[in-house]
Picture 1 (cartoon, rainbow over the protein chains, first blue to last red):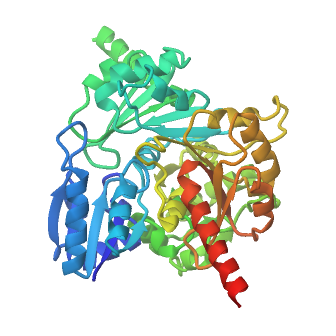
Picture 2 (picture 1 turned 120 degrees about the vertical axis):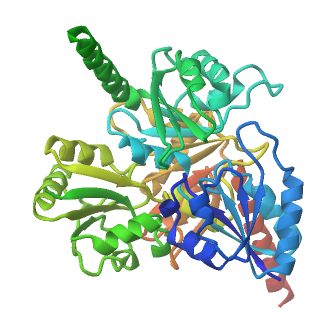
Length: 253
Length: 253
């Protein structure tokens, strides 16, 4: 009977995996990975049989139960099975369902943490999620728009926190802006969209809550994160400064 | 002129640093590290000059301005300066003050993310911070007890979130339990204290909100985290089950 490792693949860049994760990939027999995990990360497991499972961002997902069954089957045939999840397995990774299925089948599981997207993005921006006098709390949430509850119920969690980080949210930017404003946030509250954090294709789009939907339309197909809070005001100022300089250059020409 | 890297040391275990962080430590000239960073992590920088700065958990801290000045001075004398912070630099790490000081001095800074304690602890517990139907939002906060605001103002951020993670909090367990109950949480809400997450000395103390102060008194001097939410109910059930089995064994003997 083999063992299954639920491993965090981090935000994107291969050298942002943990040392433990990289070593495990180096000796894995099979790797079941999220479809969005970068090729350079998968290259850390050159000898493993690679199986892509699940897609994010609204695309059709391989049914969770089918993934669970595949993991159980693999652990019965191989010594070292890795389930590689973007970011950290324990934040919006549906890890509990896989852990429970493996436990029911009597298979040993170990979880290896990873750098969640918010931390990859914050490092890349050089902006701390917490800051003295400005941000003492950060909430991580995923919107559940139109799931039968009262409208914007998901936004309650964002009400008291200084900084709000939204995962799997960029396709619902309109509903998110509405929900957060309904929860009492100012339309002009600074926000930033970060796509492909830590990868060469990384894009940073500073905006405000009310202009979030427009900014989200500029995103590509990579994994993206929405972060909202006063700590992002300086990104807006920098962007405005660049725009001013450009206008002056154009006027001078 | 050298470069300064603000590097996350992760929750404790040396192989939970990122590959990028481990490589940087291997070529660092100087490493300024938090006093609580584990010896095995520091061993990744055998050639570097090691300087301990700051202490946590209520002990006297090296004044932040002094740390800032040391970093600037070191970057003027060495090519590769690492500032190693427990967990992730961008969450309760005071990174912004160091980044700003270095920027003012014209010194290049790069941030390398790390596994924050909550992720190390969640992996060790095998309990996901988010779970379908039970936890869709997680707030990370540090209590600011008695800082002149109205009482329990810090607890507002915890009001709407399904799961609450408190950093640098175990010495204020009494005030935290009071604050969270004042914010509307049930006294019997499950909670867990995790000390030395990911290290051999790791301890897990399941409890409830009202019994948090008693549980906190059992902690040692290692870095500890408080996590509160329904997702920890099963830890309490397991603990109760163990207690039952023990009582039966004692009765049979």
